[in-house]
Length: 248
Image 1 (cartoon, one colour):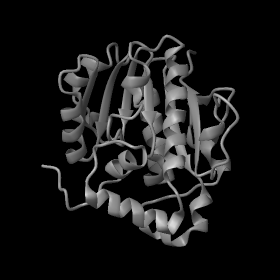
Image 2 (spheres, rainbow, N blue to C red):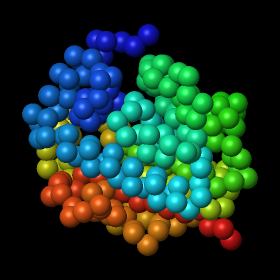
Image 3 (spheres, rainbow, N blue to C red):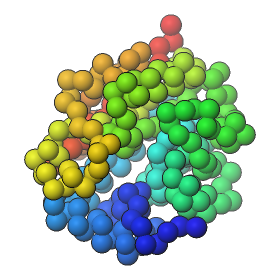
Image 4 (cartoon, helix red, strand yellow):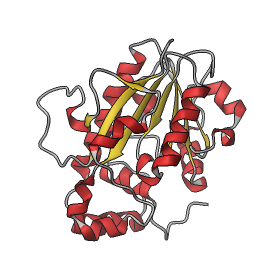
């Protein structure tokens, strides 16, 4: 059961994006964070818009299967809504969010939701994986890891990305974001993120990708990655990148 008395980061983001899959406790927590940080809706809308532009760019290369880790609530311009012809497997390590996602996607033949810990790809349900990401390991796929790097230490993140590189076929793409040190300017908000939260300087982003090679766009603030128009003036809270698994 979903605990309506405990806030969820995924549902808080749904609130900031203007969705309907959140509870009063999530609104209270989101409002408290904004008192310490400032308006969050524009920042998360920019991150969701980056996701849309990034997965469209991946789909344009011919990729038609996506695996999303730490997916949160699968609405408000998420992957299956952006690339409607692709099949998508959303995953999360929060069982309550998995159940919520499964309820939202019930009846869909192109998008599914299951449990997975990104640091252990063995936790993926093989039946779901092969149903919604056909050709896994043999055909290029799109991997999405947004909001996860900040909660993995450098060694774990590098190992995880390397394992995903090995597991995927040449030509696969990775969409990932990194939290910058911008939040350090808001110490009360930073304290709310908990001890596992990690900020990083942009200079370390590319080395952490390991064998994944960034596209020519590089690692840039998410609102400056192939913007559809003049970029908004927003805090550089998140940097994003699309990286490719070598075909060699």
